[in-house]
Length: 408
Image (cartoon, rainbow, N blue to C red; front, top):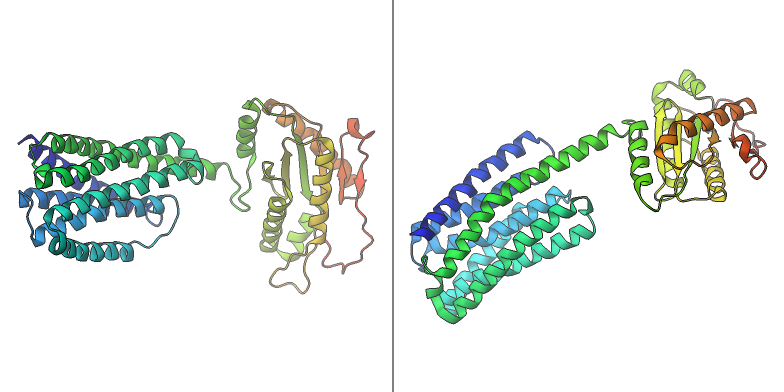
């Protein structure tokens, strides 16, 4: 009687949260984060338990075959939903139909060849293997694509591991005790249904929490980036610097302020759409030129910023020159112009600074260098006065002649 009540509660939980997941997926519009697939998984498992209650004792019938197929298909749906949550666009309906058709056929063959005990044992064994695969996927995700959700993934791995163990134990008991292991009032089945009911209560709100966490992270990331170039904005740079300098191994950083020479002429001559193309090109060059771990951002207009982390002065000088040369040498092909555009930049460099609180001072120092570089002819790297002795101002060779309407 207790087990029957637990299964009834389990059905209610699964079906209610299936509706909730579906409603959440409708509100997410284009990016459903797998919530529609989680809804299908809950629906399948909920109906499987409804069929189990309707069936009563284990028996060979169409209802039992559908019950087992739904039970096995539900973890497949959860796995596919998790892949969708993490941005992997895996096919769903084809995989689900293939699993359903294959497992239904396998049930018929096993029932006729080995009997009902083997068919029920096959369900427990296959379920244990599926949940084991899910645990392995979660553990792999903690080390790769889900590093930002470490605590949540460890929690899910523990819960899914519990289902895996219980299904493995049920497989062993079926081989030892036969169908008697499936008695609703048996101690093992009671423990199994208590765990499943607890899981159905805990897991769905946890999945909702993951969706809220991901949406919050995306909003925070959007607020920290420039919408045109997708580089960090001033807010994003400040937050990233705070994280960096809060670490124990943080070294002083250098700031490079990069300004596109004669950018107003680009807008006045070619229009703002071409100007936006130039800015996006600049952003791409920055992304390719900076080292992994350095910070690149746009702080407004035609001004970009690079913060070199864990680098000495020689490394900063090399990066600045590589960046200046890359922008000068790369042509920008745009629609509606007879010739590709060529841009140059002036770069002002700050002295090293050792904390997020010194960011604004470093900005002012690099900005002063930028103005000196503009006054000295542009297309050059300007170091702060205190660095002149060891790292004199560098200017680029500008002997190459280009058509006047393409040099900006």
